[in-house]
Structure formats: C-alpha cells, structure tokens
Length: 343
Ligand code: DOR
Ligand code: ZN
Image: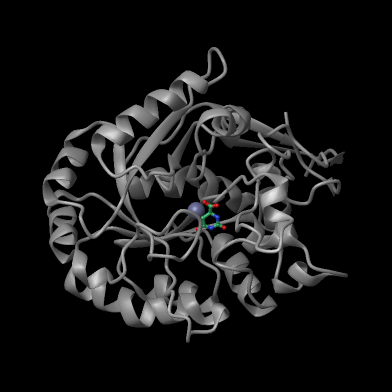
C-alpha cells in the first residue's frame, strides 16, 4: 500500500503543558489531530472547571492561525474534589472527563489520590451524570514491582470499582500489559482503553539497548515482548474498546538525560506515522482508521470527524531535536528513519 487515507483522527490522551512549552508542541498535535483529550497534570493541576476554562483559553491562544483544533478538557481528581465540581464539569461544554492519578505515580501527581476508595461520592456523581473517568492504572506501593503495578491496580482497585459503579464509563489509559487487555475484553462496554505508539512498537529491551535509553522511559514503563504483542493484537483487532491515545509527554532533554530522569515519550510530531508502522507490522493497516478515528469519538459520544488526511509510504528521518524551552526536545526514535509520512 502506498497511500493511506483516513478520517482525521483524534488523540484521546495528550500532555500539552503550558506557556512556552505549550507553544512549542501544540502545532504538532494540531497538524495531525482534530481533537485531543488534554491531561490536567500541570503545576498546579487543573482541578476546577474555572482552571480548565482558563487552560483551554491558553491552548486556543497558542494555536497556529486558522487551526480548527479542539482541546477536550479534563479535571484532575484529588481527595478534595467536590461533587459540585463534577456537576459544573458536566454542565460545561468543554470538560469531557476526570483524570485519576495515584498520588506519586508519575509527573506532577503528588496531589493525586492516595486511596481511590475515598472518592466514592465523586464516582457516584460521575456515574449518575455520565462523565467518564480516566485512570492512570498503576499502584504506587513501593513493595509492588514496577512491572506489576498495572496488573495489581486492576485486581486491587479496578475490578471493585466497576462492580460498585457498573454504569460509570471508564478508560484505562495507556495500557501496557496482556493482563490489562484481558481485563478490558472481559469488562462491560462501559470500559475501554487507550494505547500509545511506544507500547505498540517497543518492549522493555528498548530501555537498555546498548546502554540506558532515557527517551524510551515512560510510565507505565514498557513491558516484556509478550505484553507488546498482546497490545498490538488488541489495537489491530477492530474491537471498539481500544483507541488511540499517544500519551505524548514532552520534557526538556536535560530533564530526561539525568540521574533521575522524567517519564514521558514525545510522539506528537509523528504519532500517526508511528501507529501506521505498528499496524503495518501486523498487516492490519485496514484497522487503523477505526482505532484512530472512530472508536474514541464513539466511546465519548462525540461526533466522528468528517475531514480526511493522507499518509504516504515515504521514508524520512525523524529530527534529532525539536525546539523546546531549556534544553530542546528529543522526539521518540530521534534521528531514525520512519517509513510513513503524513501528507
Ligand atoms: O510517562 C509519562 N509521562 N506518564 C505519565 O503518566 C505522565 C507523563 C507526563 O506528564 O510526563
Ligand atoms: Zn499521560
């Protein structure tokens, strides 16, 4: 296949940051995607509808002239979030979901939730109003091996959560394991999952290929090959429970190439090309449009996009570095060739 025409996709999990960083990365996403679910883990986090409205205005102001890109906003759940905020979120036209971060799990998650069960009154309200809950599905208990944190989260928190709130719509974000795939497949239609390009293309060996590779470090961390294979199978199966969420998460190079490097892979520049490579490797390019353009809006009950985009089978080299505050930004697979290119 030499060209691939798709309905314009959306990114259902994205980190845009703020200020100069936002300005640097937003054009990449706006070029590829019509909409994106914007994560609220700013410093301080986006905790109220007023915060989300202000952040949305800053995003719209940072867009390239003429862009029609639509940011879909989220609230950052804390143990102090009040049900009234959920009511206001649902009444707003722009807050589409609430994001749960386990306290201490990842970038800017210190104000997250220490025990999910303390948020039951919030989940009751979200279930009643039908506002989706987005989960960073990992436990943070230091006794749990980092490669097991997703599996333990599912057993300890997620299974009880969905049995308690059977009508709550839940997205298990950036799934990384065969266990998560199995769980999502066996769960009711209210439960879906996003999958990143890095988890489809790489296993944990990528972190140690010839030396320590900080640009492949994200959370949840890459897993064994058997897990990558299960994710690729799920993404390319055509099952509407699985959809595109890049988790593109920019950090300055210096914050990643460090004695204590930040988690996050930057893929917004070339996300569709990365997904196309993954789908092509499974001989499933015909399933890319459903995953990238249909399953997400169907789950969120938003209209599908109508515009189209084209990818050409052309080899190009991913830049070594992109402009970004402080020390530049290394895109995923910087300096390497990629075989698809968005027209
Ligand atoms: O790798 C990650 N980076 N995982 C997350 O959950 C957060 C993200 C970020 O904000 O940098
Ligand atoms: Zn994320």
